[in-house]
Length: 92
Image (cartoon, rainbow, N blue to C red; front, side, top):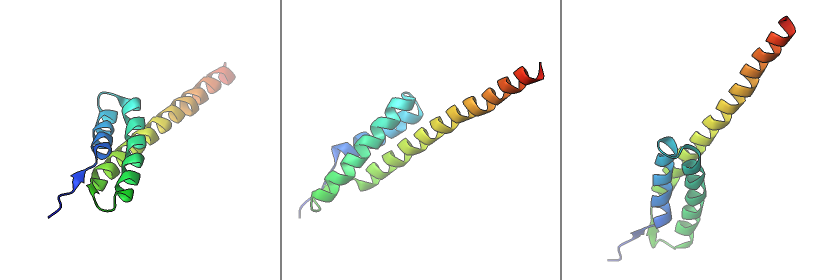
């Protein structure tokens, strides 16, 4: 019986995705996205020798969700607070 090995990139993607939500907010998320895509490609090319697609997928999801929230937060800051600054300048 041939035992499948878990992709190291998939594990790194999962860990980076978790770090993106805790200790390394932006860098961890970018690392999770990059290594997640690399891991999924590596797993597809391995012809069944590598496992860990679920780890890579969770890392990708965590990474993309974190990046999306960063973008929404930055948009909120510029649009909402910029709008308030504009309103204050027009009102005075």
